[in-house]
Length: 553
Image (cartoon, rainbow, N blue to C red; front, side, top):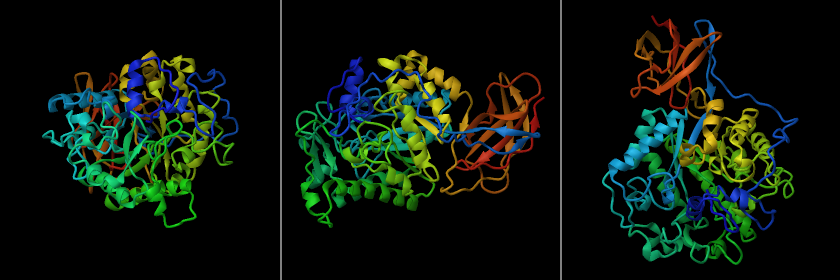
């Protein structure tokens, strides 16, 4: 989710356009040449020897569901599965700016249908791409990627309310994806650093002292100054407005903090704020890291004070530091987010500020400078013993590129490695790539890793109110499906349900749904009598006891 500053060769012009404006850093992972690290190229190394770097590392099984149905154990995977739905530059959605309300809604529902078809249980939607908003905000102008304009005029409906409601109706968690510091996108599509092109209600017009333009030239954009306390508080308030107003399940940042270095001679001019620091002996790098740390810590604290059940997670660049620079770093030789972006991702995990972390591991297995098989164990070890769950940002967008990415099983093999470690989920970049299914790679990994539904992993630090066991009253065939009738147990009503079908020596999870929005249905029941059990879950995924069984006619 970042933009490569220097040499980049892409096969597809459309990808080049998207990356040039989005800065999705997804490609920087393989191409950036940093001031310390050696360059990363796009080819990677041969994918043979996939298990290299794994020997001797602890193997941790994924968490499952305990309980029994009709005397056999119930079985359900606990794993987050999601995709990023990118709005900036209309990369994924809406397909273009200025569409009608009906068209925008129809397209969004299409993306939710895709998520359900691929057995996802979460979606990460870009609701604040660059100082704007996909909801009626007192802190930000309407997003031009929605309205097609920068005039501050409302579209006449509330997209956020619609998005959250429809995601929940399909039992998908809704994670609101924010870019905290970005104020604009570069021209010609965005206003760049030209304040005369900002929406009239843009906060950087009212507070020009908060704005820093970077880099120079035609790709310049405006940033909220991370070192200005007033600007930081405002940015936090803008995001927390959405937390307060909407029933979101998570607050999500990607890898954008201080901007990635953009060539030589470009300076991020935060000298005025740096001169006001309280510790005059503090270096510029340490001060900038402290600024980002403060944002992350304060957001963590304020989210939990406002809505303790809302999850907070970040998807950082995949390398914290290289072992050659820091003994605590990973076996890699790429850009270091600690030094380049002043993002101390390791500290955020060890300090307990994050509920989940989604490192963007957009490199092939065996890639010399940043080997997926070597960096993955580093992240697994980092979260071990913490309350931070590890999901992996998977590079679906790279499928079809030269080298090992021309092998349709690259992502499948990466996800197989995930299963060997303390990895509790994957988020795929991005929605459009999942729909495209280049080389059949998505179908391949989905058939191997997402063949059955999954429940979201439980976070022990979140409020837990597991409901009482439900009571199943009947199971009736309705055409090609089976509908199970049930009643909630005493006490709090569950937020969602999980249906188990006895199959041999286990009762397998066959479907899930949101209470009040979806009937309990087994979509593909076998012939003959079938035994079912049901459980209820609270909004954090804590599961009730398993119901008594019911047998269909």
